[in-house]
Amino acid sequence: GAAAVALSDASFGARRVRVYVYEPGEVPEVARLAPELGCKSTREEQLLHGLMRTSHLRTHDPEDATHYFLPSYPECLLTDLKMSPLQYTELVVSALGHLPAFRRSGGLDHAIVAPPRGMRSVFASWRRHVGNCVILAVEPAPGNGYGGDVF
Image (cartoon, rainbow, N blue to C red; front, side, top):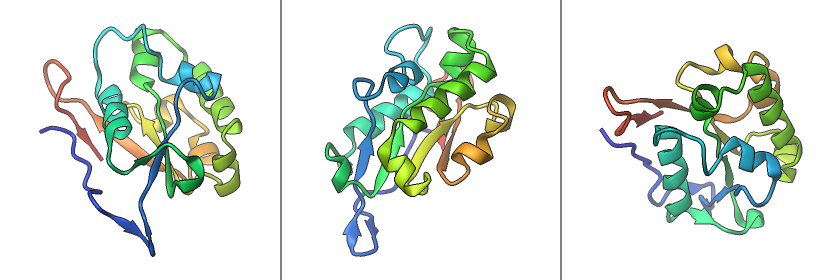
């Protein structure tokens, strides 16, 4: 089935859920985590980024956000662009260091995409760096890769 986000008009306490999506132009590491070019096919991680970009829950003001989405295309980076797990880990850690909201909350209000092969297999120290984050696991659909699920 198609990826579904069930946060239609969700609220967070007395405050309505608002998601800030980090964009490649803000932090150079974000541009490297979610490359515009180089991925051989559209993957669920890119579709998830598109869903977050177009969500009615999105805010363009980081001060208005209750949650933050760090776009990353781990499967593209590791498979298509041949990045090593160590390079991926270093890039994620570097990106997190440039995000003031992440430093302020320790990641409790941040969501990050896990590669289909699992965080542990490509990001050995994930618990230390993103253990407080919401980890979005993308499961590819059989065949052409479209229509996977997001958990």
